[in-house]
Amino acid sequence: MAMIRYQALAVAAFLSGSSGVLAQTVQTAPGSLAEASSFFKAPRLDGCTVPLEDLAKGGAQALRGQWVVQKGPGEAGLAAGGRIEMVPLPQRTGEVLSLRFRNGRLVADSAALGFLPIGVEDRAPLKPGTGLRAESVGRGDLAEGTEVYLDELTLGALPCGADRMLRLNLLAERESGTGKVLRQDIRLFLVDQGRMSGTYRETGPGGRLERGLITLLRR
Image (tube, rainbow, N blue to C red; front, top):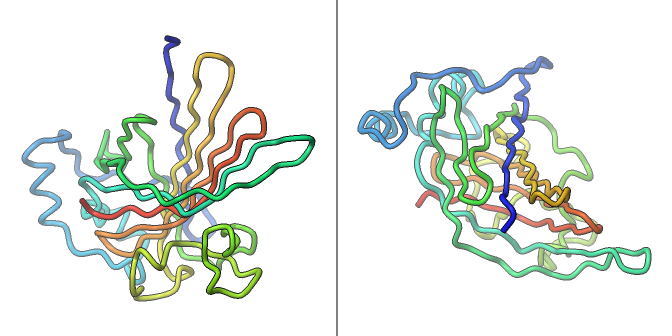
């Protein structure tokens, strides 16, 4: 079996028009007692109100721990006859993602993708075209043409709109050793220390495309 190499690409964080990465925080060994106790000491997070600089200076400690990943609903497509045919994807749950600090940086530890640095982005108006079509994610209750940016049905009542939440981004490329590259782009809105949701898009060779809603819930 060909060896699989995972390469994670950091996503820049943006604040007031300047770029940077999530600030260095107190380092603790992964899995250590200090790491576990730091979570319980961390203040509760409100993604609608916490300043980006506060998250970078220590608030992200509240995100440390294990999260259950719920993918979908969404759609997948393959190129055929010069066209891309899209088929619906069901909701899938099960993968566990661990958020921790590595060398002072908040990272996601995935069994499938390895360590992924997490970029944080400040609040901003939602850009048309960056969400998913309501019909493609099973939201027939919304008007045609409506864009969906996170899974409100799974999250329940939200304290504010998505445009008022901080955002966490992960970008990764997986190489199979055959020259084929799979790229996964995950864009999350931070609701609080127990809920994040947004969209994902995975692309690969041969016109392969998968996209849908994704939600992380505290385990």
